[in-house]
Amino acid sequence: MSTTAQEASPGADEALQAHFDARIAANRRIEPRDWMPEAYRRTLVRQVSQHAHSEIIGMQPEGDWIASAPSLRRKAILLAKVQDEAGHGLYLYAAAETLGVDRADLTERLIEGRQKYSSIFNYPSLGYADVGVIGWLVDGAAICNQVPLCRTSYGPYARAMVRICKEESFHQRQGYELLMRMMEGTEGQRAMVQDAVDRWWWPSLMMFGPPDADSPNTRRSMDWGIKIDTNDELRQKFVDMTVPQAEKLGVTLPDPELSWNDERGHYDFGTPDWDELKRVISGDGPKNAERVARRRAAHEKGAWVREAATAYAAKRRNTEEVTV
Amino acid sequence: MSGDNIFTGLVEEHDGDARWAFGTGFTEALAGVDTTLPEGVDGPALAEYCQMLGDDALVQAQRLVHWVTDAPELEEEVALANIALDLLGQARLLLARAGQADGTGRDEDAFAYRRDASEFRNVRLTEAPRGDFARCIVTLLVLSSWRLALFTRLAHSVDPVLAAIAAKGVNELAYHREYAVSWALRLGDGTPYSHERMSAAVADVWPLTGELFAAHPVETSLAGLGAGVDPASVREEVREVLDQVLTAATLDTPGAFPDGEVSGREGRHTDELAPLVEELQRVAREHPEATW
Image 1 (tube, each protein chain N blue to C red):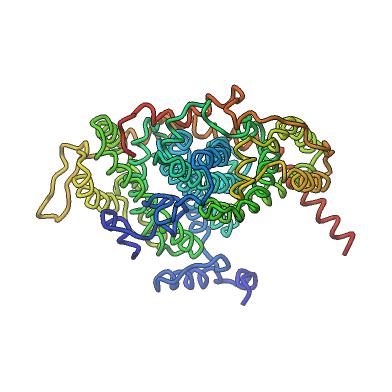
Image 2: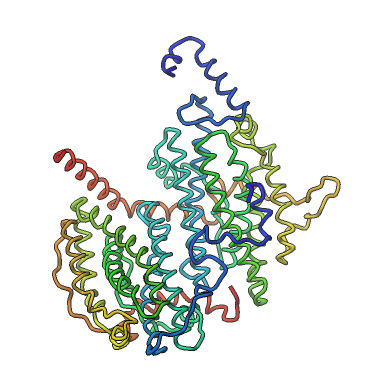
């Protein structure tokens, strides 16, 4: 049954749409060769490529500390972690390419500032405690977001997420373990941890996106099985999981409204500064310009290397054609 | 570990570190290894030798990590991070061994973070400026070919710890060399511009190669006991490898290695090392009482 034949016949779109809807309703995966509505494809391209960009830009705040990690074990851990993030970016770009886009083009969109990435990476990392807090809170929030995505409706994205989530759990754990060690250390170290928690807590809550009432695309993404939970549901889940961990660690989360609500069976918490989120998303965060500029510089500086690799591959192809 | 429990399982005990990356676990690098010194081998000399080989790896890794977030392709960031991680692993094992051999019981961090630059024993090529990607590849090609030749022999050391470290390192270094070769070919035989950059990189690196084959008295004496390797003994082998690669990459081979003298092995370094060590030690020195 060829798609072209179907497209030519009247009513074919309805039939394809019905087939697609039935697969989604049955919780079955959509694969690259399956017909999909153009808006579904576009939504996924946007989500998967933004996710890939987030992994790549997300290497920077922590990458800055690899060279100065305070022990060789911490250096190895951080290096392995940042390397994993590059790997995650690669899985995700590969998943995006199955939707008919080109990685080189997605890279251009990133370095020209035409495509977004997670707003969290536009905050600075000011001390080594930030490495721990990024692992604990930022990777923790990412895990909350990503675990449900292992069941997302688009096959290549879901499979990439399974691999990514396995590694993310190590990342989060190393962060928490670093903070534990620091909290057992000197008074100065404890102060560093608290300061980092104060700075990263609210931006971490913003990682789940705007409140549901202001997230117009959520409903449609959920209908398509791309998104499994709403932003607010995930944010609540994150808060509920994090509070006991903060207590065990001995840090204070910087929210006076944070308290257990017996009736709801959840923690109540304050409202993030949504205007700040809007500003950071629209490019006006503390580090937006620097993060993108760094990626662009690496890309431009490496152009001659990529050209050489292409030229070499072409020569090899020609040689093989001659000798075969 | 089921998906939804990843986060909630955070505060529980885990034993799955081996599945992540070597050296990121929670145990001492040489825990459980019989560290008795072989008969006739002088502990302080062995410790000095371990620092030489360990510092080569540590300093090279420290240069390489700056490529992460700065390489021409993401794949190269992954590969160079991987190579740096291998070298860091070698450095940690060797420095831990140094602390056992000299009887001080110093750990890897005591060597990495509490020595001044003048106490580092690495060859100067490892501390040379990072340069462009061609320079990175030529440096990696030379150092991995050299270290692979050394470690292949060191895997038969009478010191079982050194032998085990070298045996593990051989596989890693073979990959490092393979990676460097693959890029040497692409850049050397890529575009006229990349060819020019590679030629310049070879010309920059070559004067520093002589030192790689100059034997420090400690290297000579440990080689005599079958515990170490005399670097002069790998000179021809390394030259042949490099000749072969550079020829295939359509680059001029600069011929014999220049005569070099022991320098970094005696703590005589270029001006490049002090800032590198300063960056390495910055956080650790700012918080001398801290635990990490």
